[in-house]
Image 1 (cartoon, rainbow, N blue to C red):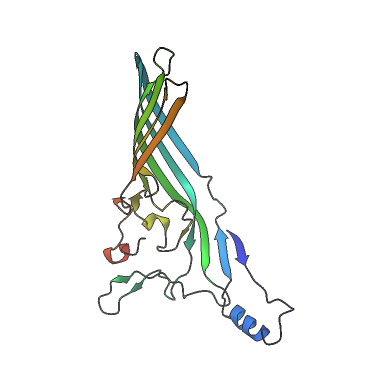
Image 2 (image 1 turned 135 degrees about the vertical axis):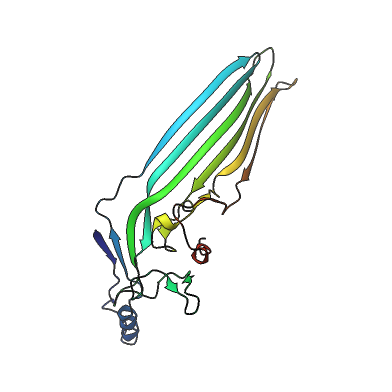
Length: 231
């Protein structure tokens, strides 16, 4: 692994009364992290498949299509801290059930948390659309372009969340419906010539987001008491 330390040394020109405080902070490891990145890190990639059909029913043009996109090996930072017995989660003193608390307080002496860079983020999206087009022509001086798109998207982390610090492995995160991709989307644009020589045009767009947090599948079993801490 490559090690990257976010170190913040004490500035030499601090006032005398500020130096003891700064030194104390450094000794307790605040503001310092150890970041390790795997040597065999993979390049993230996406695969896409698209199918479409287009036909004309004068004067209307009809188009339908389907698209599937799979993205794999996205970069993620995992928490490398562990408890004294090597575990990530602690067991309850009476029931023995796992307590959903990340081991943030258990840091190496003189440093903050350990972060491990790895692959594991993935997303899937299936989209289907229907498009109707009425072209403008001198004999029919108006146009319309309307498209409805349905998308079913899933992800094992919310988009742009690079830090995954709730579980020891990215495989422990369930695959959820994507909250950042609209499930239904409708866009329409049109124009029309007026008798006074002006052309009026307008555009309308509406989208309905998917219900966030809906579990699609778990990559591997997660104890119920721990699953509750998934954001």
